[in-house]
Image 1 (cartoon, one colour):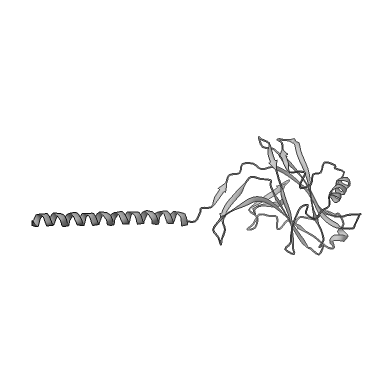
Image 2 (image 1 turned 45 degrees about the horizontal axis):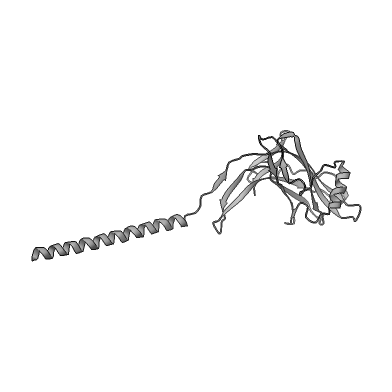
Amino acid sequence: MVQMRQTAVSRNLSSRVLILLTAISSLMATMSWSSAIAAPRPTLAAALDWELGFAPGDLRLYVDPTDGRRYWYFTYTVSNLTERDLVFAPKIELFMDSGKILRSGRGVPSRTVGQLRKLLGNPLLEDQNRIIGDLRVGKENARTGIAVWPADDLEVTELTLFFQGLSSDRKVVQHPESGDPVSLYRTLRREYTVPGDAEKRGSQPLPLDSRKNRRGPACEQEFQIGGKSAGCWIYR
């Protein structure tokens, strides 16, 4: 009789231990899964797949003879020197020292773009909409574009041009507040100064600010032309 009671107690104890171990195992698995979900996502970097050839023109002021309105305009040429055709869809913005950001083409009549084509003697100049599309391989297939912005405020001393769409390179970083992944794209930044009275300067090209376009804390890599700094590559 005593032996039977000991056996029953032993079985009951073993059953409780087994249930406890199962519960602990389940809890640890749940904690592990929760930690994996809550863990911050790592920063990723996409490999540089392609980069276009880029020849920037000047940034100048234009006054429409029809209504006297003023515009900043910038010309450029892009070429595809990779091994395959690509789709070119640039995003070109002008940052004013007042803090205002202008997107190319917005608030610009098509008539003004047509007048600039005639002024520059190049009927093939493509604005921000017409230039979107295939960019075929080879220098012979290069395309020339023009970006135009309203120049309603000429009380400026500095202008910054941001040109995105010249490279496939990007970085994926965490948003500092939400922790969500955010993509930053390789962007060409060109810093200009506006010396004196912008309107009296007329259509003279704006000079680049060589100091700000050199490599430094705010310039990860210089964009050079003929060995001279002509902008900075940044992620934006």
